[in-house]
Length: 146
Image 1 (cartoon, rainbow, N blue to C red):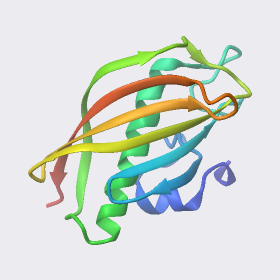
Image 2 (cartoon, rainbow, N blue to C red):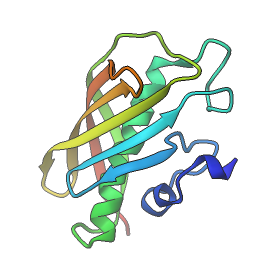
Image 3 (tube, rainbow, N blue to C red):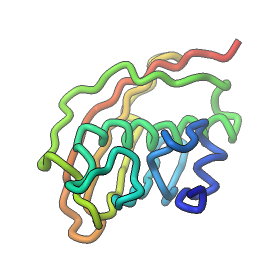
């Protein structure tokens, strides 16, 4: 199952199977990241109808975490744990992400308040058709490591 996941992701975030939900790192930088999620029978939380759309919040959270991992790797911030504190305006056009589709998740850091609070604008699009399926603003608390 491990070959389902880009090794670069595991270098940037602590998530591991079965709770590693994003499959491929497409782009990452100081303030933005893009990942790919494959929706198939092996995808966590999938059933014969697909993956419930609310799981998209975790796809967004893990994609946003790539930014923090990049920042830590590049020495741009101190090591910390990130906790998803909440989301605003999570909107989705679908009830489920359908089997056989591939999603592209984009996150941009919208604001950083001190060292402890970050917000991210996130979207999920269908890779083939380019249709936006979901969007949200995530708030993340950054707790320094002791």
